[in-house]
Image (cartoon, rainbow, N blue to C red; front, side, top):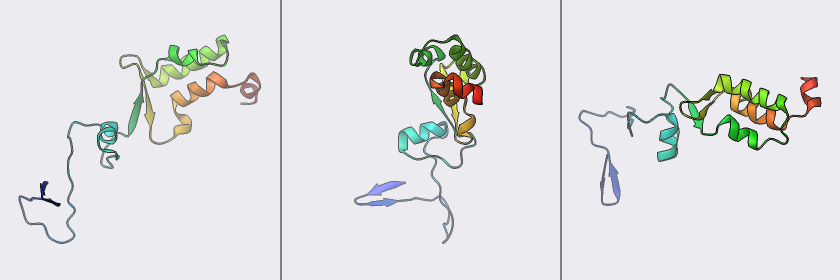
Length: 119
């Protein structure tokens, strides 16, 4: 891709016929979220569609509505399945957000005892 004056041109090493799809690789090492952060769109060809949120379980617990031990147990149970301590981050999928461990951990910060008993 090159810019000539007020025109953007695509230069090809071969013949492009009408209807041929042309794709551009912005960065072969960029992951799904990197592409969004740098260029503002998601790469539909990416195999992995996740985002990482940097917040520790301890930081989450600081924002809890109270300091009940059962609340900490709920958050830590979700951290066991969705938190990566090496990267200090939670992995957020682009599908099944209702099953996302971080969102469940955040809900645990504010859930009432009555709501837990109903579940």
